[in-house]
Image (cartoon, rainbow, N blue to C red; front, top):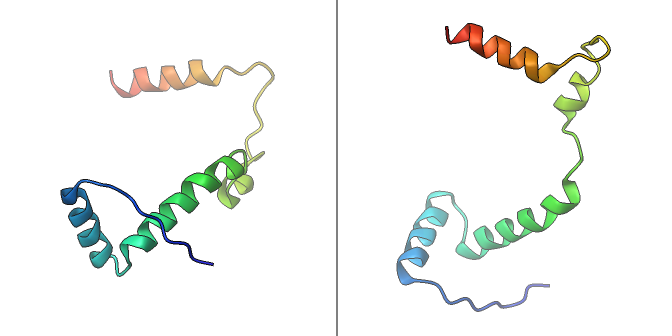
Length: 81
C-alpha cells in the first residue's frame, strides 16, 4: 500500500533529482523509495557473502600464522620501487 510522504528540500536539489530520474527512466518517488529500501536492507544483509565470494572461499590454503598484511605490504613495496 502506497503512502504519501511530504519532504522539504532545496529547489535546486529537487530539479537535479528529477532530471536524474528522467534520464534513468524512473520517477523521483521511485528513486527515493529504492534508496530507502537499500539503506534499510543493508543492516539485514551485512555479513552475507555474495555468490562470488562464497565460490572463492577456501581455494587458497595458507600456512598456519601467515601474516597477509605483511605480505601485502611487501608486494606493494616491490611494485612501487
